[in-house]
Image 1 (cartoon, protein in one colour):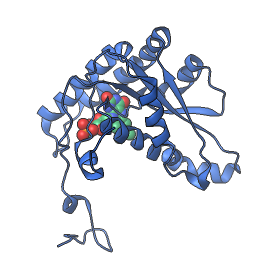
Image 2: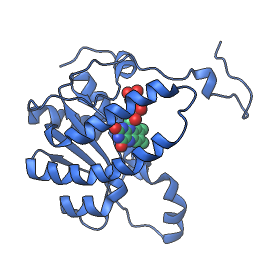
Image 3: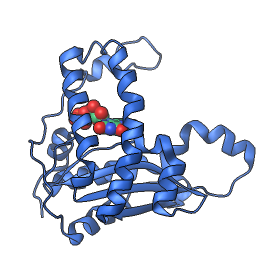
Image 4: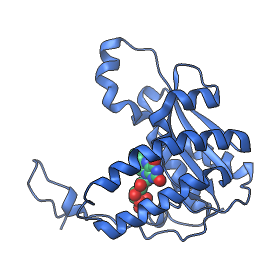
Length: 217
Ligand SMILES: Cc1cc2nc3c(=O)[nH]c(=O)nc-3n(C[C@H](O)[C@H](O)[C@H](O)COP(=O)(O)O)c2cc1C
């Protein structure tokens, strides 16, 4: 088990999309999921459901759906200017790595699919919750990413397969009220962990009102 501290883990957890095909023991996946389900969820509903996909046939079917979603967004990213904090070169590297992942998805040892079972609720509340629909699953997904890092496994939060959620539901045999929110390819990494580069706290934080600088100093 890892001896990494929590901040060291957070600061070095980056998307690792080039993964070795070597198998990942089920016990590690179990440990990762056991950490995932420690996450908070709205009303403590714990409506998350996970699928651990290892079958080559199912992986291939997921890859076909993923490739459709990836082609949809790839064009969008290529056609617009890179955000200033990234620049064209860094964005280009992300897109190359993402294309590699899409093309090698079937070789990844474990595809972890994070789903959410819709809780029964009045239609008007459901409509207002729309924008927040993922908030009861993504904390668990982040726990997955951090646990993978702690165990020396590479992983990436991906969502493009869920652009075709109905097809994912069919591939995985999901009931109608269970939707996919993230697909996390997990394997031993070819690349290195962190450090993770981001805009600074000052660039993204205000104090009390929008536009009032927070320095924390
Ligand atoms: C909501 C969300 C959706 C994402 N979807 C995808 C995806 O479909 N495919 C992919 O390769 N990466 C995906 N990513 C990963 C991001 O591209 C990545 O986190 C970002 O570029 C920062 O890179 P880093 O994690 O290596 O620091 C997604 C990340 C988030 C938070």
